[in-house]
Image (tube, rainbow, N blue to C red):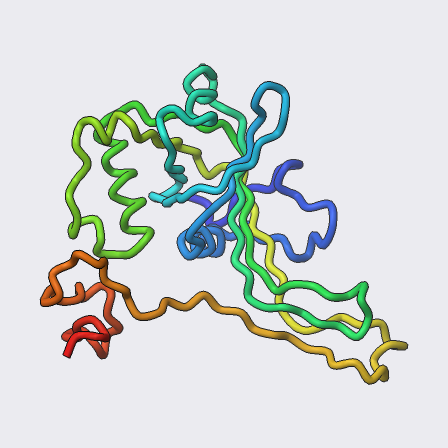
Length: 229
């Protein structure tokens, strides 16, 4: 398999083309790190964009949804697959420039376009649901009740092959015009990071229940909840 996706007219940016990336490892890393994505499709002639959870297994992106939701019903009615655009974005920092025009964000994003299909095969659907749980937190899929027949019927999964794909990355500081660099306004980057706080147990959870190891930092594998004596 090629190490990079092949650019197409739909995956080639019209602005800042130098920020585009097609390396598979970069695309996979962004998709695997992002906790949500946005699914865009056409419904009754009008564009719709919905946030949802996702998971990647090799070169297939799986999207979670309800069996009765708009995109799932539309995909079922599309014999050749539902044309979609899926985006995932990680914001790494606020870029503050001396001039208002040059303020920006440091980010990593992925755009995937293609035809999504409803996962009908039961074994593939279970693999996808397992991957969706693992994407939320590695180790969680084995530490919860598996879905029953009713829950499986109420849940649907879309599959989108990673063929037309591109990443776009912006990093670094402000890009001010030379004439503005002597202005007194502060310029630079405010880093942003998504960090997990201490787990908060459910109100009716047994207070002696230990915190699962996959929710502990490596140095805190034996820890309990923060408020447990």
